[in-house]
Image (spheres, rainbow, N blue to C red):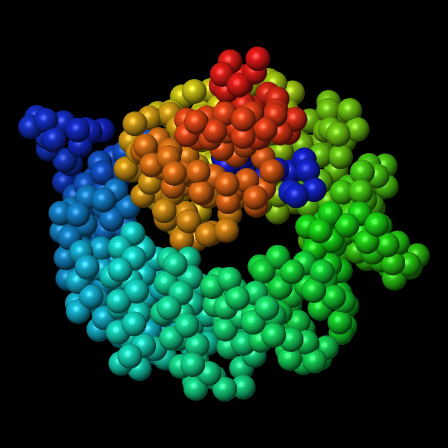
Length: 557
């Protein structure tokens, strides 16, 4: 399975008339009864046919005449499917029904920005950002993200809002805008925002965090560290600031500094957990062992459920399965109980007790007293176990039972989409991932998974690039997404650009899939010796990787 498509792991610590007929000129008549049209839309949606689903929802909305949920759904689906004419029709209906709805204004702005019409988008975005509704500015931000494919228009409209002083004094909005612009590589505009932010929020330490983020993105690491240094004296009595400063250091790869900051001030299970995660990132096993022993001493003879869960996680990472299982089984109550049971399943498998692990997963699925999410995740854990045991039949059966128990659940659709990809069924994989994206249009995992599948298994490279670009906006430093981006560039014949991206992904994460992709591009560019070096490292990481195996005949003597 491609590394960039891996679903959430519960076993490791890290934890009916197709629109095509219309295109061919065949006579098609959509149903005009709202319920019938809605059912057809849902059927199309579950099959991944977004254009047909959008058309059917629009028909239902027209027939209803007053149900804004239908017109809104038709609009969002049409935008997602890039059906521009239908999106405009559905939006017009939605606007007629609810002219002042934030979603209507946001969708209008997004379509305008996609066309490069900054003048029309600016007043809409300004109105949303300054709306009394505290959630309206998030709609404006969503419109900018939705239009991120047109980077020029997005940067121009933000610059115009900044110059006209139409950005409200909401620090969270400024932070999110800064992050978005950095993802879009608009460093000069972020630099221009910093002095304005200082004027608006002179005493807010988050401005220093924004400034440091901007400097680091420009490669000015020492300058960024100098900006952050004064904040350390202020964090001991401010847990929120301490966590934010540590997160900034973490984002900059300054894990030792982040761990030092997290050790300041009052400690809790959360801060202990963050410190453990930072030590894991540094691969500092002695430090993690010392933290484990300290936490055991801190917890005393009667640790609470949260402490036991954290101790189990650390013991699991330190490869102390008996201790980890004991800690997890000692979590007898509280909200931590479900996660502890899930993690115990993974420990049992890695102890060679896979049948007990399967039994534990099924028992958790049937535990009506357990939270819904935990029972859902127990199905995912069972499916993953069957995958590790190379039992695809029962893996699919577990996912089928899961979707029967939790119809349309995004996490289950994602897992089944990846299953179909493993089975070389691209059509079904795409259908499940498209259905997921209707529910969560900006899901970076789903965007990346679908984009990678289209790039790797089809010739629909333009669609793949568009999906992966949206994932890059959400998570610009995600090695799996960078790898997918490099791979689609390679498939487009842009080999030198692909090399740069794959080298970056390889530097961020040593993964067999990334290594195989990098070796492939190096080989095509005539750098055979370097390709063989990378290939050998990829083989050492995972000799069974499909991407690695595809290179074997060309790179092994």
